[in-house]
Amino acid sequence: MKTLLSYFKRPSRDIHAVAGAASPVLEDDEAADAVEPAVATHDTTGADGPGHVTTDIGGKHYRIESDDNYLDHIRGVFEPHMVQLFDSLVRPSDTVLDIGANIGCTSILFGSRARQVVSFEPSPTTFAFLKKNLDAAGLHNVTPLNLGLGKTEGRFELTFSANNRSGGFVSNKTQASAGHQVEAIEIAQGDTFVKGAHLDGVDFIKIDVEGFERDVIEGLRDTISTCEPTVTLELNHWCLNVFQRIPIPDFFDFLRGVFPYLYAVDMDDIRDLHNVDDAYHVMYHHVVGGFKYPNIVGAFDPARLQAFAGKFGRTIS
Image (tube, rainbow, N blue to C red; front, top):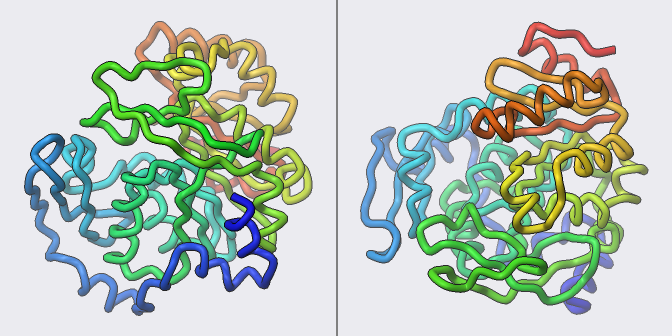
């Protein structure tokens, strides 16, 4: 870990040294031509070995490889509702932290939208797919790191089902090795990493870490208070309760203490989590109604939320 952080005692453009050789630089049209035709193809997945699909990510087609069932989920097009959400929040000048990058779909999207992206994926085997998919995409502004961020630096374990890499969770409080894969991972203290990386600010953070969100945010307290980025994170009561033993009311209280603007997002609705009635509505429909409002947006600057609010016919001041 200390060796890794020592790489960042230099200008931010050298961050690529951490991930190895940079991907080839391609113009947008060249990058689109470099991937397979816009036909959804699929080899084998899961226990049968790696497979791939060619999928639309934000309007362009990319070859995505993995060995789990997530490929079936993104066959043809990658999560259009999430693409729309990110498009309403990410700006071309942004520096983005993609925390919990998995096999790279969100990092590819951010790389096509933002100035600079740092992608964190702590699983060594998942990271191999992330690196391969980013290389195939030909994006020169995305740096993948085989590392997680959290409140405390150290060596942890990550647990995931063999057919679902996207569901990997940090098993520091709950263990479930039977029928699962367990990998040793490295986690860096968030603020220490950002300071050592000499990034030119942090404008947008995506966090998808299966219940470990509070640890990530606590580790980035100084970064968040100084840079005031817009943050999106997953809301999943199962992961919060079972993996980290955090009840949703306590989680919302924590987030309200960090973000002056805080919204839960469903496909066609947003709710203000600083409003007591809205917060209850979200908790009820998320827990009882089948995981509705699966995403949360936290922010400091209402001007950055205008496109986001307009998407839902709302205004935020």
